[in-house]
Length: 385
View 1 (cartoon, rainbow, N blue to C red):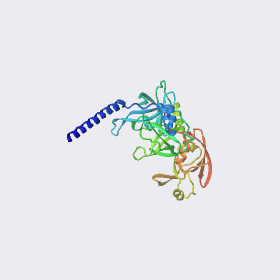
View 2 (cartoon, helix red, strand yellow; view 1 turned 60 degrees about the vertical axis):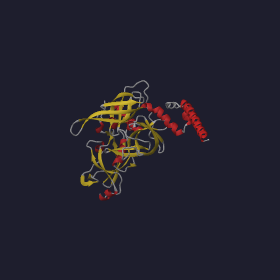
View 3 (cartoon, rainbow, N blue to C red; view 1 turned 120 degrees about the vertical axis):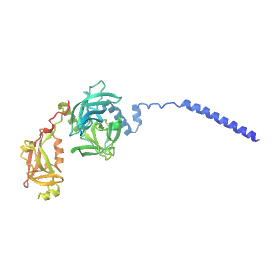
View 4 (cartoon, rainbow, N blue to C red; view 1 turned 45 degrees about the horizontal axis):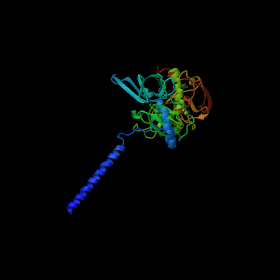
């Protein structure tokens, strides 16, 4: 009886084993040996997706051909006057059919050897047309080729907080990476290397090293900003990316293409001290807001208009020499200002030849000075080819 049971168990195991082999062969026959490539999205695919996904996919599809990776190589001298190679890496985007590419000035550096890579690994050499350290923008140029795509430039004057934005760039060298988010704030000011980048667009779309110079786009696929900086203690994405508004970038790029440089309006007021309650009380002034002129450049528009700079050294204030006795500027074109930086930001948005109306306080009296802006002599040097 026991022998009969063992025979039954053995036969049962053979049957199960045989069925397993047959099923395995059938499954193996139906399973491909490699993973197939995903299908190319069609318009019908976009319609079937959630609207937010479809927007990002369309913008990426349409704009990626105009976005390039930029590698800039140059030679510099170290402390011991030894030649040291330097490499910069970032993003740029084509802005016209003549091969002009807009990017950040800090991406191209001195521009001795610039290589751009398009989607599909098409590599071309580029020449530096010009750059502007004040706005941190540069224009480079490649030899245009058939089928060259360019990015449509939008309008950054009508942006709103909460608007969807999309960035394409090369963070950490990962080319043509797309991220999406929203405009978190507008008119942000950021101090970089002792210069103020004013009126920046703040976004929570992931921006990392390598995204610099790349486009920030709206949901219509129009470039509304140039990704320029991040606010992070680790130099990696921390939720705050900053882009230069495209209207300002267009103005800079047009001047670089036409002149090889950028010209800025200039008053000749070279330095000023912000009026804070503590300082106004110490100087016996009424509670004014604005700034006190410290230094005026000889022969400048401010000098010719009769404005006065500081005439007496009064020690230090906030770690800087304090010159008192100068005129106090409280408003520009009847708009109250908070300090010297606010004044500079307003002037930078004007054009050479514009007349501005300054509200001035001197000797306990208020009066108006009309001043015509001249070209800043510090920007007369051509920086490109």
